[in-house]
Amino acid sequence: MTIQTRVAGVSDVGRIRKSNQDSGYTGYNLFFVADGMGGHAGGDIASALTTQSLAHIDENYHEASQASKALVNAMWSANSLLTQTVKDHAELAGMGTTVSALLFADTKAVIGHIGDSRIYLVRDSAVKQITTDHTFVQRLVDTGRITPAEALTHPRRSVLMRVLGDVEEFPEIDTQAIETKPGDRWMLCSDGLTGALPEDLMNGILLRETDPAEAADLLVGEAIEYGAPDNVTVVIVDVLPLVADEQPASIVKPSFLGSAANEVVIEVRKGARMLQLLNPRTITDLFTPDQETSSVVPESEEYLEKILKQTKTRIRNRWIRQLLVVLLWIGIAVGSLSAGYSYTQTRFYVGVFDGHVAIYQGIKESLGPFKFSHLYDVTGVDVTALPEYQQSLVADTVSAENLPDARRIVETLALLASHG
Ligand code: CA
Image (cartoon, rainbow, N blue to C red; front, side):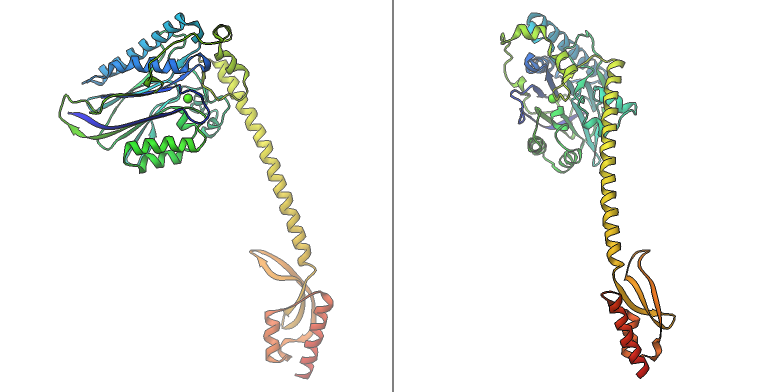
């Protein structure tokens, strides 16, 4: 038996970028996203070339190991293609691309992954991230040195450790094979989606929208609503009930998304010489404090430490800011409380103490265990000597504006008691 799918893919340039450097592919058994980088130096070309070269392995596979091998080899070939292209067009130096791919083999979903695009699996009403980002901040999260929340806003969150097109001849590709079944929903996306959308909103759409095309449209639409600083690409693959052998998973014609949807033309670009000398990779990485564009720095302990140090400075500064805010609030709270308490102590009321009319300073209301009054004076007026109505008034307490006012109330009560 083989699986059958329902597929949708959307790629959008976003609101800030001038070109779409993302590419994607939705085929018969193969689905992937590729996020190109290299700024002026052809991130669009990197992802498009890779996409068009990978699409050739979209065939029927019976064994997961066979599919996995085909995927890794194809990604390595794409890597060589990029390296060769840079040799022929020096102005493209520094270009590279992520790839997160899903290739069905029988009832297995075979994953091939490099970079920070992601694959999620929606199963049993839960959304689970299947791939791990090859970023320095993710490495710091994995080793428990920073929290996922800190990684989310880290200025160097887009610095990648591995991509296709980098100097290595056989870059390490993460692979895994996962048994898939009807009802599973696979979602592949570039970091333009996960970087823009809050996680719970993304999960909500994936869980709620049954139609994959609507879900993909909604995800990209929401990313744009959230400002979409980066290109956004989403591919959704819903697994349907099993069908007879020898049928492709998807019966819809394959299609290319993003920059791969166009013919790749490498023209001599302006400033090519300049780019050749000033590799944008080194420039943006090392000197831009809050860079947002993706870039690659080869995996190294030094760079990891550098990022960690930066995180710690940010955390310390944040702590100082938070502490100041807390102190300010405490100050305001203490100020208000003491002003409030002083006010209560200008008030008096008449009540009962030990069977006698008494004067209390403060207000009779209390706040949980906190009381804002105390006994000020016990008079010689016996409560039982008062007429019934006045007895109940005093039991309920009678508020006074100030001490003389309280004394006047007591005098009146004393008069009533003597006549009673
Ligand atoms: Ca991106």
